[in-house]
Length: 586
Image 1 (cartoon, rainbow, N blue to C red):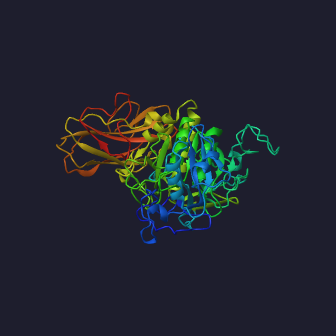
Image 2: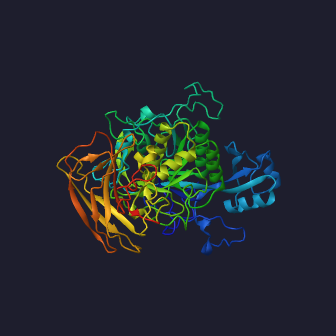
Image 3: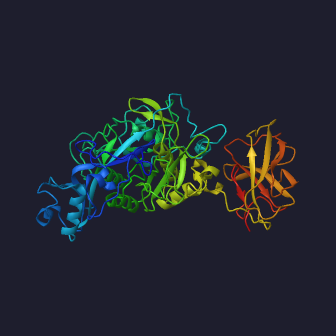
C-alpha cells in the first residue's frame, strides 16, 4: 500500500490541483506527505503560521457531513451559511453526505461552523481528504517469489507447506484501491461476480444503489468498470489471489480468492476519502470477508472509522498497510492502519532476509504483524508483471492469508481468523519491539494452529537460552549443526542440558532426530550432557542424517532443555521453533 509521510514528511503544497486540497498516500513505497491534523477554530490562519491541516490538500469546495438519525441534509442551508443551497451527494447509507460549501470559506472553517450552528442535525463534519498513491521505483532485476517460498526460509511465509493443507477457496476479498485489470490472464478467473445483478440490463437488480455492478464499482468515475489506470491495485490483487496452478505468471497467496475490484483512485494514484469510505461500505454490504487497504491517511477521520466499524459489524476484516515513512506509528498514527477497531490488522514490511524493510513504519503497540513487502513480483495492467516494494505489498499477503484461513474454517468469526493469523506469526529477532507480535506472517502456522509455539517449558535455573538450527540438510548424507546461545539476563548457569531436533509433519506427527541420524516418533535427545555457561555462544555439535522422513511439508524445531525435562509441553507440542529464541522462565 502507499503510505502518508509522517515525521520525515515533505510539506504538502497548499493546492495540488484544482480539486485537491489534502493528501493521503498509498503505501506502495517510500512517500512524501504530511501530518494532517484538524485545527481548532481558534488557530491562526496566516500564511506564515499555517496549521498542519491547512498544509494538507483536500477536495476543494466540499466537506463530508454525518447527519444525525432522522435528520435531512436539506435542512442545513437554512441553519448555517457554511453549506450551499444545492444538492448533497450521499456517500453511505449510514448518513454520510458530501456537501458543497460557499466560496470564501475553507473546508475546516465550514466544518467548524456547521458543527457549531447545527449540532442537533450534524454528528460531525470534516474535509474530504485525498488519498494519493506513491510507489518505490521498480527493481530492474527479474524477481522471484521469495515471499511465498525460499530455499533458505529466511524471507518467506511458508506458503508451500501451507498449500499442502489448502490452496484456496472462493472467499470474497475486496481490493479498495486504484482498480484491478480484471482481464489480466492471471486474475480474470478469480474476479468476483455479483450474484444479484443481471449484466447489461441497465437495472439495479439487487437494489444496492449501483446499476449493473457485476464486478464491483468505480467510485472515482462513477461507473461499473473498475479497471486500473495506475497499476497499484492490480499489483495488490495479484499478491492476494493471482490464479494458482494455471501455467501463467505468478501465484497469489490464495489461488481461488474472489477479488472484488473497488476503485476510488484515478490514473495519478489520487482519490478522495469519501470515495474510500464508499468503497469500504460497498465491500461490507457485498459480503467481502476481507477488505484490503494498501493506503493511508495521517489525519484521523471519523467517517473512515465509522466505515471500518460498520465492516466489523458485518463480520469483515480490514487489512491495512502500516506506511512507508520509516517512522513510529505509535507516535504518529496512520489510518486505517492505526484504527482502534478490533477488525483491523496493521501490517509492516520485511525484506528477503527477514529484516524490517528500510522504508517500513513500525509500532510495538499499533502495528500487529509484518509480511514480505520488498521487491515483490506481481501482476500489472496490460497482462504484465513487475516488481514493487512497500507496505502496500506486505498487506495483501495478510489479506490472502485471511482468505485462506476462512476457506479452511468458513464458520469462524473475524476475530477468530485474526487470532489465528497473529498467533501464528513467526517470531524474528529484528521484529522485536517493532511490531506487536514480534513476528512475520507464517501461512503454514495460520492454517495449522497446533503448530504455534506454546509458552516455554519451566526452567528452575532461570536461564534465557536459544538453540539455533543451522543448515537444512535433512536427507541421508546431510548434517545438522546446532549452536546454543545464552541470552542476556541469564542469572545462573546450567551445568548440563539436553538438546532435541524435531520435525512436525501434517496431521501433527512429530519425529525426533536420534543419535546416529535416524528419526524416532518418541522424544529422543540428539545430545545430552551439553555444558552451558552464562557466556556460552558456541557450536553444540554436528550430527549426521542417515534416514529420510516420510514425504510432506515439515515445520522444524530445535529445543534446549534442562536434563530430563523433555521437549514437549502439556499438549505434546515441541517447545520452540527453529531460529526462534527460546526463553526459559520460572
